[in-house]
Length: 231
Image (cartoon, rainbow, N blue to C red; front, side, top):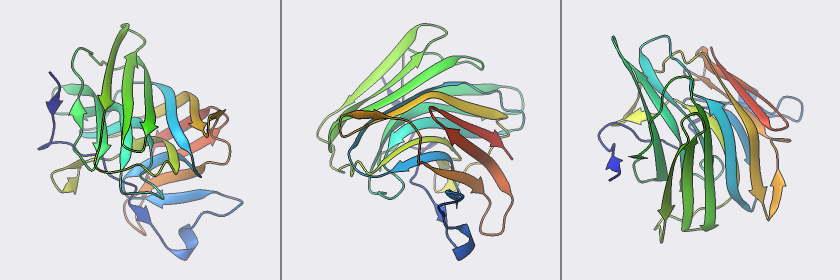
């Protein structure tokens, strides 16, 4: 049976850091966020997103997550998302595969184990604005977990497709963001109005600690690859 992490983990919409100097331009297409880093396609008609990545090994205590999703950037009322989170303590590091239809809390998959170095494929698919599926495949172990959403109250806009490394919330606060090293999404594709698209034209999001804070996670995107690095 799947278990809720209501007291521990809640993935959130993009908390944009906005100032005139931070707005995306045709030259840079980079924006800043307190909790997201990665690549976001902005448009209409996004109904599926997929990507592969290797589970990182964090080197400092703290947490983080890598996921794919629909909405949460220019549409912040709902997000269909799935991925893997990590938490490094003083002695051990734990990993979970999870799914979420924001604003509900994330739920851990059961029947799938995640370890550092595993190759993961995460996929979300919306069958309507209120229904869809979330799937995490551990390509290293051969395990797969899927959840089907039906009749959700909060509708998707289908405006965004994204590949994200996130500093998520526990309770009402962002967790300490662990040095995750790097995460590279490969085979990063989305379905838009029935056609397959890559990350071309995506806005890059770098994470930093407030308007004048240091960059915690920076990313690039080209074709079907999104690469993020701590710091």
